[in-house]
Length: 397
Image 1 (tube, rainbow, N blue to C red):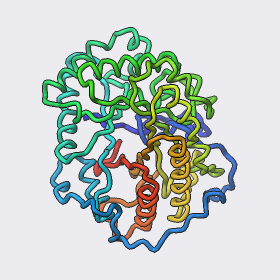
Image 2: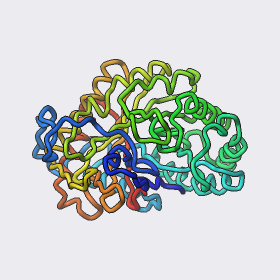
Image 3: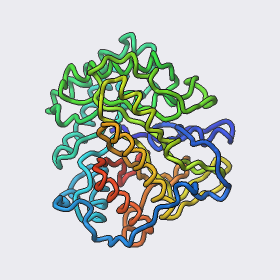
């Protein structure tokens, strides 16, 4: 299985490093909140009102939904990590898990990738978990050529990929939800042209649903868009409508908005900026859908672009998470079904140098951030906001 090789990009200028980050994918990229804060790495005062409750770690996150003790027997790294979450919550935690795979660049590669990934899909289904599949437009030879893709150059590879999955016993339900050309409005894949992106997403979803008509297709765009697919200059929080307006209504099932609070000597940790719900609402409205998910997280420690280490304590992290929940409730109030996908991988030892986790394996009893996670989950439950997870015992590298 191809897992995201997150954060391998080396930026030519130090000032660009923070622009070029994302916990998700191959390079260090994604949105960086605006700079309007002090230099001590503390959260904005407007999001510091949260308080860590005296949460007992044995408290049940989801009453009447027991944990699954058999998860520990799974050979799926994401499910192995989920056992820790269920231990913390003393209950069920989520039915949706984010996983990653790449696209085929040949018929032969299509068979191999599909065969490998079928084990992941079957493994998740065995424990009744729905995959949120990040289908990255990269092959063993490099990034997909968007121009060639939209004109059909990869059609036979995709056809073979999905027919192989079907022949291996994968059902529509096992397929779950596929995120097509994720974060294509940032220069991760070399092309941020909205027309090309929309055409590629449309083609992929049509082929996917040709073989798995009841499976779901999704879009994930970053809150910050970049006009040049080969440059990290000029990123801005602008409308995402150009990326979705040419996609046929009824084809896409959900819209995802990505935004993270990056460590910065002068940070802006306001979720209203890095995860502006209006961007998601406008895009979803054009697509004619009522399901939105937010891909986000918070860090305990991370390196800023100048190599300064920024740390957040449990109260500060909870304050940001509470602000994120507030943005989700704004979407709920507009009639949208909302889920938050929490990226919680420890990337401190990678080139990204950021720890998004709430505990490392084996540190549940000592991590100060366990109660932060528990209070966040409680907020989601109280507000009827869904939760999915991106975490793995092996790391999403």
